[in-house]
Length: 267
Image 1 (cartoon, rainbow, N blue to C red):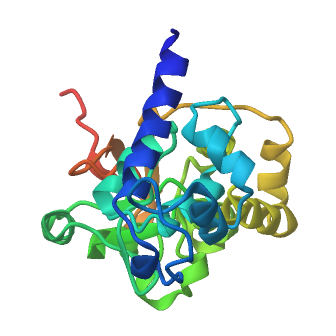
Image 2: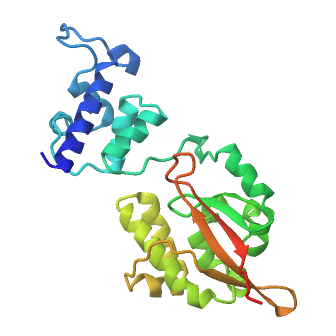
């Protein structure tokens, strides 16, 4: 059995075990009129709750390679009442990134990371895989954008990079770094193909930024590699910062923390 087949079998067995621990009453379904041969929900009941066909869900539990999407797995996770750890395990078995915990629709940042960001003297931020800015400090607002005052839908780094004219003027090497920014985002989009939020963001950028459209049509892809950002300071003096990023904060794969530190010049 190949590793792919083993992973799909493990996913099917896991879903089956989660289904077995539930009762119709616990998920708001009537008890039914026939005696259950095994404990837990029936496959057709999970399929009904998730909005998928019983045949399709049966194939998923059987470990068949049916190319399940993240959106459908989200529905199955809700149907099975999975908690955060269980949901993350299901997504890992399906080779998807799990969304981090949220409250009132907003992603939660670990308090320790929030304090680290706020206490740093250098620009620092936390973003998700879509480059939505989740946390920032005063220095980041000075160099990038005044995040507390801008609308939530614009509090996004790729959006700010290609639409914020003030930021463009502050960044001396904006032209040089823009192909990398677009290519990095292209890679993120490809890894999250089918995510409607990515699609909407790309569509909005294509309509708003000619520069983004130019780079996007090249279909270039980059992985994170740090780099140097050169800002224009007071009196026109340039300030060079090296970008350092960290991922998988406290096991939360969707949170990316990065900080800018002054470049060290040789004497």
